[in-house]
Length: 155
Image (cartoon, rainbow, N blue to C red; front, side):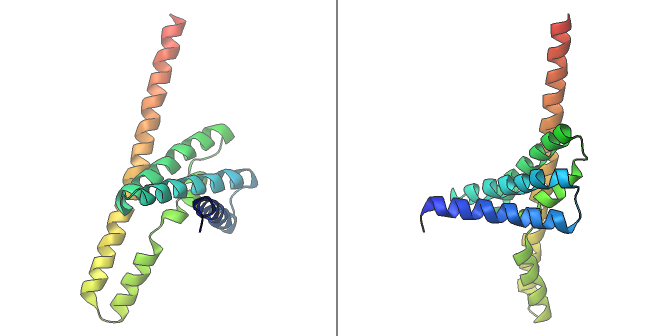
């Protein structure tokens, strides 16, 4: 499969998955396209970093960080709560397969394998949470720098 086709497929399906989840949770209509873009860009960050061999944790961290930054931008632009863009945007990054495999292994009585999958899910969820915290930190730093520049211009 050509590389450009993989990019188009990943971009379009992550957008559609995010948009579908946003419609399912009844997001306001003006936020739908923006939340779809947020999820697609977060997934593409994850996908490109995985293609470069960065690993799941780093890829999820940077994907979540980009979703957080984009969510802050869309929230200010559309004057809506940031959670409207972050919650649907994170859907493509949720580690659903390892969580399913953990539950499946528990049901089959393979506790060592189940614990391994649960640890993987916990680490990925932690990386996503840290990514959102870093996005908030970047936003605060940029806001304080902008305020300082405005004060210097006024003086």
